[in-house]
Length: 452
Ligand code: PMP
Image (tube, rainbow, N blue to C red):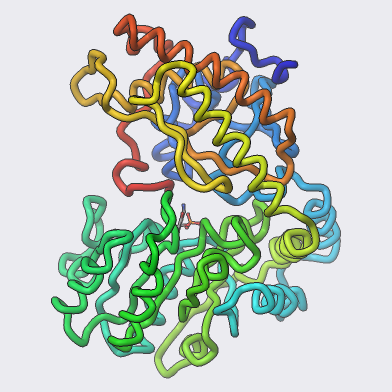
């Protein structure tokens, strides 16, 4: 068994990656389009800089090195890369055209599928990215309620409304931050406090329904009651959870129905499509007096074809059961490996089988340079070893329908060796010395508290 040409013992060429990275940094601010894909988020010089192609659970870098995928392109891939059913649907649509003077019928069909699947969805509006629909939800909530403050928790995108009162507020007019107030997950009192401080002016509670941890008993119900009591809207950001854990998202799983919900990532298996869904009377506010929303490519038919193929596959095949099974096997296997390597104090695995994190704490007794943290150094070493063994570890794990039991075995075999390397390096207090490239930088994930 082995993963393509990637093996810790074999000489792995990365010359194409290095050349592309230099060109990327020269031509593109930050070297990438997505915060979590910036070069600083990987072990530079050891991690591949780009992915040239992918199929199922496997990816190939520009030098031809093969990897098993672990984080599904930050969430969009649910069936597997270049899934044959989705690819065929898109290919047929490409023959038939993609955007027209009027909308394509698929727009109606996919809207109806979402309405059938998602508890809160009485009407649906499409867009392209998660941020499009979370920002639209906030604007709609303000217009619908005639109030201004958005109570929020979690990452919802790069828009002014989400970034106005944090440490990434450059370019945002002063004062806007007063209209967005943050609360903490699983802490209903912190949400209630926003309503006290901004009495009669909170338009909506916008929250990710699950974080890496599940909602504590009653938390989502309490948010629902709070919104109802205060005549505010409850909005679930299901950009990540939507269609991943179940057909109806976290709102179905936990039995709490929001007024509006935002979907993106998994709904089209890698094609750009997002959706705002919700109560008909609220959604009709999109056509309310003085409200404007429009997007040239929102009804683009190739992505809608991808979504129809993805959603019907999710509905008709045991995708969620199999993903859960693969995720459970991996989580349990990784927990055992951590124990075997004697790393229970410093290594962690946690979250849901459909999306879990494998990381490190700051507890290790190792030398750490200025501007560094023990957890980031250990994660860098683990990432280096995993990438060299052909496992595309980034921390977050999202199994797909294309992952097999063999993939699980290969990942666990590689991770077992990675933990041994980490344990030995801690023992020798030589973690930084063992790194063959720049460690992961204090990047965007830490600044926003999630994947961007
Ligand atoms: N909401 C959540 C929960 C997300 O995870 C993300 C992206 N990671 C977004 C919103 C923003 O989505 P996009 O990057 O597609 O705009």
